Image 1: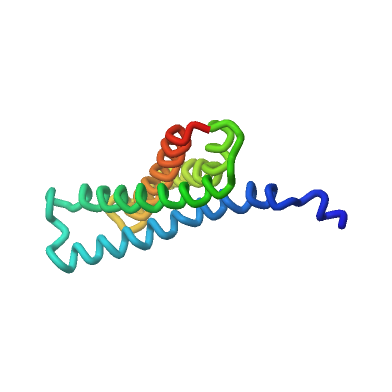
Image 2 (image 1 turned 45 degrees about the vertical axis):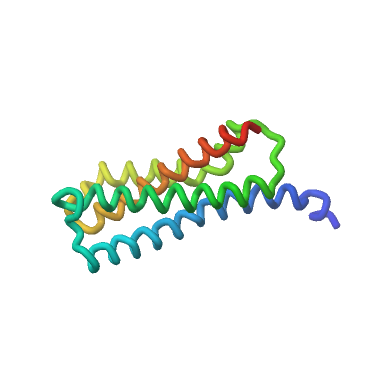
Amino acid sequence: MICGSIITNKNMKKIIYPILYTFSSLFVFVFSIFSIITLEKAIGFRTIWSTGDIDAFLIVLFWGVLIFWFSNKILILSENLQSMIFLTHFRYSFLFYISLIILIFRYFNHGVNIGGMYGAMYIIFIEIFLIGIITNLIFLSYKKL
C-alpha cells in the first residue's frame, strides 16, 4: 500500500518507456548487420564507393530512422504526453547521450584501431545513438507537444 501511492502507472511509463526506446537500438544494430551481410554476400560490398563505408552508413541510417520513428510513434503516442518537448526528449534520449559520451571518450582516448572490427563497431553504435537522438528530437518537434 505504501509503494502503491508512490509508484503509479504514469510514473512507471516515465521510467520504462525510455528504457524500451534505448532497447530499440539493438533492433537497429541487428537489422543493420543482417542487411550489410546480405548485401555483401549477394552483390559484394563495394557497390557505391570502393570500401563500402557509405553503403554501411546508408543501411544503418535507413534502419535507424525506420525503427526509431516506429518506436517513437508507439511509445510517445501511448504515453499521452502533456509535457514540454525539451524535457521529454532528454528523458527519452538520456541513455543515448550517456552512451554516446562514453563511446566517443573510449574511441578517442584508448586508440581504437580505426581499420579493425572494434573501430567499426564503435562507429556503428555512435551512428545508431546519434540517429536515435535526432529522430526523437524530430519526432517530438513534429508532434508539437
